[in-house]
Figure 1 (cartoon, rainbow, N blue to C red):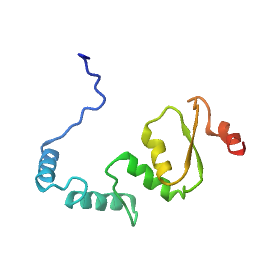
Figure 2 (cartoon, rainbow, N blue to C red; figure 1 turned 90 degrees about the horizontal axis):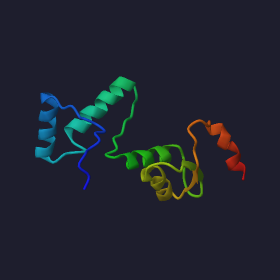
Figure 3 (cartoon, rainbow, N blue to C red; figure 1 turned 180 degrees about the vertical axis):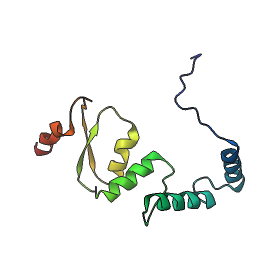
Length: 118
């Protein structure tokens, strides 16, 4: 068994945030409810956007972003081979075909333009 832990993120919750979290848990509204509405209102005000939407996880956020981009049935989308499952799985849900490529950090996306042609 591993005896050590490599910390990735150390969240900071002040008294105000703790109160909000406690209240949300008490009311059983984790991803919706008055705090989500306030957050969306604040985002719209900050960005000047008419619309805003929340996604409770990264996979859903990518799914919605892919939809907005018009990705759909039969589209072939380049996906780095070293990635998290959520990068490709929403493409599959939309009927697109992820095409895994070896992605070197030193290469620019234009390097892969010819991939479209083959």
